[in-house]
Every structure is written in structure tokens, then in C-alpha cells.
Length: 535
Image (cartoon, rainbow, N blue to C red; front, side):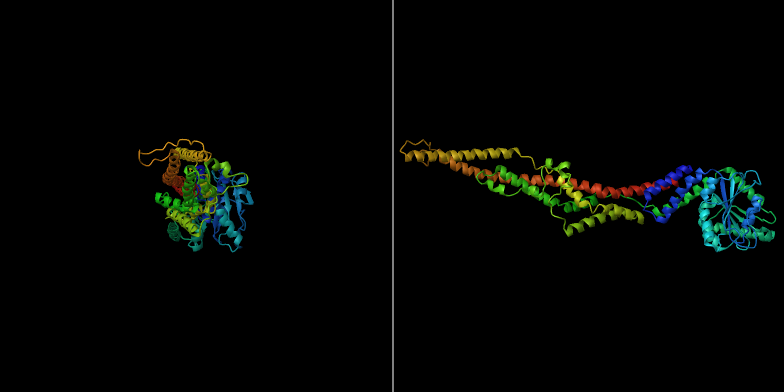
């Protein structure tokens, strides 16, 4: 994978993991991403820094490698108070500005191949001046290659191994270790010293890091060091190698923070349990009962005995009381008028309902985040609970917008209504018939024949009386039968409304609770896949 692809992948990982990994790890990775494009754009020149402890002779080594005396030397220590750059060709000011190195010199390349090299002389890393140590730390994190200068007296100093060499184990491709002042040792002592340094470096994780013995006094090893620097410069890959190592270190740190957790989706049982708790919080049982009562109310108005059904009109429709109506009234433009969201008149959630809802949300978050790193667990909990404050409005809107399918008038209601009116007409006609005969008898006029009906010699009942009594009795029986049918119809409507409401509530839960939580899980999976790809 090319360095540009690595940087792009690291950017994608950080975008996915933002706020879900330790802030210091994220900050270091973003610092790399901020520096890398500028470093690549500044050119392929190789920047090598010489770093070491006070008295290690790094400034003398700097002069010996450059063939100059521009670095201060003397008994005063530390002699290097500000980083100095020696360019073996025209200065790359853009690159030196990026590194913020103010002291710049141009020198003749002592050997062929060093023309594309910039050599830096850093302050002492163990200086008593805080600014010197901070300068070393800053440039160690930026330069392409660095040379750690050790001396025979302090090469095993714990500070340099603990604070610098050991933490740079994953940057061993960009490190060269120099044992300076080799002229102070006998050949046997020098061999033993180099062998011990190798053991220490191996313990630091710096396997295969080159070790060169040098002496600025006798010139021992200087040519070897120059040839190594020339090889690095002519290869023109030092900057890329350093950035690749930086990306690898950042990826490893993110990998440790993210881990390798198994992921899961919301189970059917958990979703069902959550939807039940959301339905309770949304007042679905209340609405279902209102649908049942509304169908009964409208059914009795449609099929009841016309003489007394006007009494039912005095009672309000239970659905209208809750401000729940027909689909035409539930259109989005009706739900959300210019003045704001139209709410139902459902009672507010009880404390028990609130507790059940919180328990359901927490249970789902626990299920999804089980075994995941702390940052992602927190993110899943935030995703689940962020919408908790807006859920009442979302659920209420879903209930209001649900087509409860109660606006339809069954055909049999109309048939019974027609029959009831036929019976009323029969009763009225019979009463008028009898009343007319009473009036005719009062004025001594002949009566209208009433056509008695019944067996010969038995009880015979006039047709008008049959019309009155039959109309009343059949009307009552018809009302009773229609009541049974209406009750069954109301129960069916309640079941359909309950199913429709549960579907609407489930959509709210899926969109505002489950989807955000599962999106966090997918973010984790994507980040994990990208880290594996980067590795």
C-alpha cells in the first residue's frame, strides 16, 4: 500500500473512531495526518537529525560529517542551544520552515550522494534547559532519520533507553546508533562495548539497527557514517519510510484501543421487548381501547333503535376525544401545521412507563455493546439514549399519523339502518291507522277495515296492531343482534388498530433507537476492517 493510501485509510479510521478511542491516541494520529501531506509536498530531501546526551560529542561529530566547524564546540555544555541545519545543496526553505529550524547553513557535500541531505544538530536531550528537551522531542517526531550518539561513559544510561530508544522500537528503520569517542577505547574494549550496546538495543526492541563506532578526533567511522547518509539520501525514501513508520505506530495504538470484539445485531427478542415498552410509552393500549369504544359508539349510532339512539349522540366519540381521527385528518400537513406539531390528547407517560422504557433502552445497549471497548460502549449508549428525550414526540406523531382504519362504514350497518327505518315506518303507519279509526268512530263515520289476522275462531289481531307491536319487537331484537355484531366488529377493529400501531411504533424504534445503535456497531466493524487492511 502506498503512503498516500495509508494516510487515506488512517483518516477513514479516525473519522470512524472519533470520540471512541482515547483522545491522546487520536490526537497523535491526527498530528501525523496534519504533518504528512506537508512533509511529502516539501520534497524528497532526506532530513537526518543528530541527537545525543551532554558530552557525547554530537556537535563534534556534526562538524566531522559536514567537514566544517559551524557547530560550536568547547568546554561549555550544552554548546548547542538551538537546532542548526546544514544543507549539502541549496537550502530547501519550505522544508526547513516546516521543521521550524531557523539556523541554516549550506555546505559542500564531502562525498557524492549527500547533495539531497539536510543534517540537523539538535540540543542535548538531557539538558537542564526545558526548552532544549522540548526541541529534541519535537524534532524527533518529525525528522526522516535520526542518529543517536552514545559515548563510552553513558551509553547504558537509562534515560536515553527509556525515554527515547525504547519508545521508538517501531521506528527502527529510521534509526542509526553511533558510539562516538571510540578513540578512548582499546580495540578489545571497543568490541565489548559494541556487543553490550547491541544487547541493550535488542532489549529495547531495536533489532538490526546499525551501530557505527566513530571518533571526531581520529576520523574513525566518519566515512562509514557519510556513506550511510549518502545511501539514505540517494534512495529518496527516507521521508516515506518515516511516515510509514509513524502510520504503523498510530495504527498499532488505535488497534490496541479498538481491540477485536465480536459484534452482533439486535436480536428479535430484544427488538420485540423494546417495541412492547415503546408501545406502552406511546399509549397504544389506550388508543386500542378507544378504537374499540369508537367502533361501538358509531355502530350503535348507525344501527340502534332510532327512537332512542339520539341519546348516544350526547356522548363524544372516544377517538375524537384523543384527537385521533380518520386518515384524511392524519395527513402530514394536518399533523404539522404552521403553528407546530399537533399532539394527541393521550395522557402523559407514568413513572412506571418511564422506568420500563429506560430499562428497555439500557438492555438493548448492553446487548449490543457487550465485550466492546469502552469508547464504543459509551458511543452505543449515547446512540440509544440520545433520542430518549424526543421519543415521546416521535411516538405521539406516529400514533397520530397511523391509519386506524375506523372510518369505513360496513354495508351491514346500512342494511340494518334501513331495516330499522322500515320498522319505524311500520309502527308509525300502524299507529296512524288505529288513530284514524278512533277519529272516524268519534264522528260516527265508518271505520277503515283493519284486516284481522289469526286462526278462525281463535285470537285475531288487527294488521295495524301487528305493525306496531311487530315493529317495536323486531326493532328491539334487531338492535340486540346488531349489538353483538358491533361488539365483534369493534374487537376486530381493535386488533387491526393494535397491529397498525405496533408497526408504527416499531418503525420509530427502528429509526430512532435501533438504527443509531447498529450504526455504531457497523462503524466499529468498518474501523476494524480498515485497521486490518492498514496492517
